[in-house]
Image 1 (cartoon, one colour):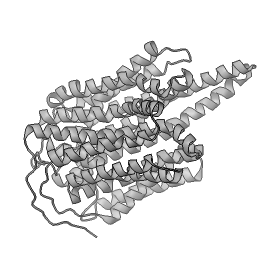
Image 2 (tube, one colour):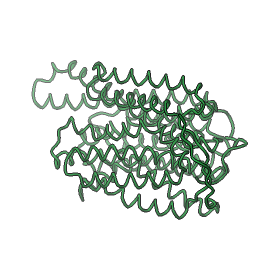
Image 3 (tube, helix red, strand yellow):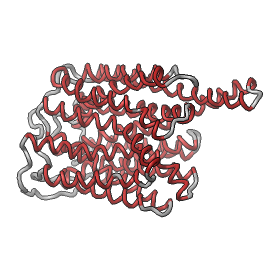
Length: 500
């Protein structure tokens, strides 16, 4: 069954160069809010748990509720973006995300807080593809597009680390609830900016594939939920592999139906472009590997070296600087000249080099000599991946597919992150258990046992870094073989420089 909207001629979009760059500021604010939320709330969870009195098992649901709603609804939300118009979807996403954040900030109990997190995921799923599709259709000239996606990539890559810093500061000096309230002023500024600088345009008739929507929503839900359960309960539990298997089956059925239905949710023409497909795979791989840095390096700094939440956030600043510099200066300048093929593999190799540095961490390693160099390499590498990959993922896309193509980028990163978190957490946990078992006989005193536990923890972290390093190296090979040589070309019929 199809749902369609009639053509609606509305006032012309904003086309002046200055207003396009102001529109980028608005889109960047929205993306920052989404990316911040991935880490800033995690910092607040221990304080929220103490304040509201919920269990540690329930605490995980505050992360899972958001990722489930966000990941499962992304593709459907991308098509809804095309259906109702990009600016309208963008504003609805902003307002909904802000209201959900306010609900969570005022939550008197766990039930309201987890409901708010799920609603954040719902509106985040609408906001993310709407913002990226606005960026895609606003900047089509190669040089300006490279600059715009350089800034957008810097925000996407650095926002998680900024979230650690901001979350630590708000939790330490104000209150954990401000980790949610902080979204309100950002959203209000973005809504005002959207109404001022992002114009309306003609809405095209778009059909919704309801069967495909149910299949892929159920499939993504099963995969994300199964991975979340695997992280906490273990891979052998029926709830883990059962949901994973069910999610994979539904996703395969969805893929098979898309070639046969008249109005597919994910038109296969989006994936037939070699450059776009390579970009989706690259973003997926980065999602797997990048979480090793945020998760296990945070553990290392706070548990082994006793860093506070605030100090831990400050420790990631060199990586933020590296991402911003690489995205806005290196990638933005080289992308129009050489295209993504030399940039993305090089970025993945640099990121792998940073992780290789982390594999040599010990209990006594210093921040300046062992952590800082790895962070700088990771930042430079990620900046060279995010910007070219995201730009290529929506390059030369037809206007009616901009929303779903943008959603596919976010889906790739979200599922990659879920897989990375679950897989690396499991491997790290196994490494820790085995290390303690192998060395327990030598720990005869409480002090020796404490030292052994610290060494085992570091061993578990370095195990995760080794795996993530390998993931990035595999990604470098795939990107080198997958991307076409030369600059991306804007195909005939690509969307004009207007915002919907």
